[in-house]
Image (cartoon, one colour):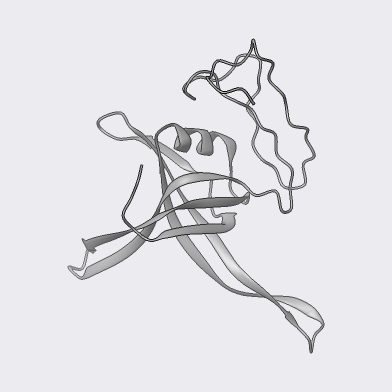
Length: 159
């Protein structure tokens, strides 16, 4: 999904569980919001101080969105990259407004403060592998990455 907007990367915490829905034409889209804030060291108090949070609304389409919604939950630290889309609309009071949305091209968990488990999907990412279990990235959880043998994999890539 290539866009013409400004490319950005956002790192922060999910403010709620991603919401997965289907359009009328059957295309999946995960909607979620990421909160990010600056953190600085206050030399007077000798401690870190959080700045104001910035909230970024995101949409992640098709298989990537499905995988993201299945794998992440509120509070998880994530990384999302994509392009900004400007949406113009009229609110309930008749006022013209503009919002920005991050149309996600790639996203996943951040491993800055947590470990995650990687689980490949069979084929083109449409179906779960029967030998794998679905897991959500949990802060503080310590899990090992699972490996897939050549006969379990159903893709065209040799890693």
